[in-house]
Image (cartoon, rainbow, N blue to C red; front, side, top):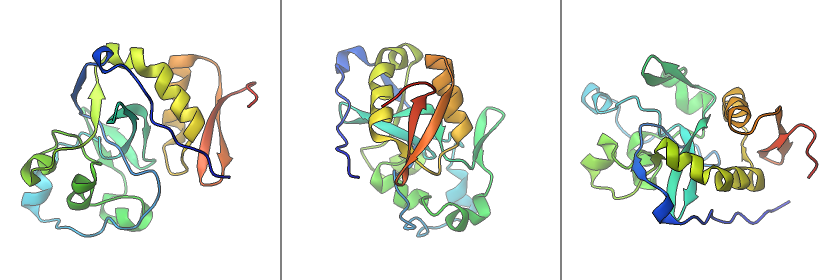
Amino acid sequence: MSRAKPVVKHDRSQTDLVPAPSIDRPRSPTGAGVAGRDDQQHEARCRRCGVSCHLAIPVNGTPVTIPGLRCQFLERDGASWQCTVYADRFTRAPWCHHADVAGAQGFLAIDCPYVVAAGYKRGKVTVTPSSYDRIWPALLAELQLRGVPHWIHREALRLELTAREGGRWTLRPEGDELMPERDGDTG
């Protein structure tokens, strides 16, 4: 069943957008991410911020990352992030995009070294905690309307939902998406 996927509308004056140290991913697998180079100099640009592996919800046309909404293979490594299947990521995670491809499509942080070096003018952001609190109701409504890809880290999203909304959350399959629902909600 096809659903309309509207953009979250939010008063930009209420949002303090800051460059993102978190990551976003495309909504559906493409397998198109394997082009690009992986030499040491290229790899050294990466900050290990994880933004490319976090999904983002558009707020006034700006893709905003959600802390618990990330690829199932992305894990914390101290203060940074790491892909647990990095060497084999394009096989194990066909939705993954090489930085050279992801930057051009806006899937990296707006201030990512790959984005800056290539001269791209778009990318994801992470908002300040106070801004995140203000826009959370709109983000949650979007998540519940659109669902999330099947390849996300399900427990991380459940923890984010529980921390912000309380209760117990499930992710109900609907087509290729998972629909976040609080246990006991009908909809």
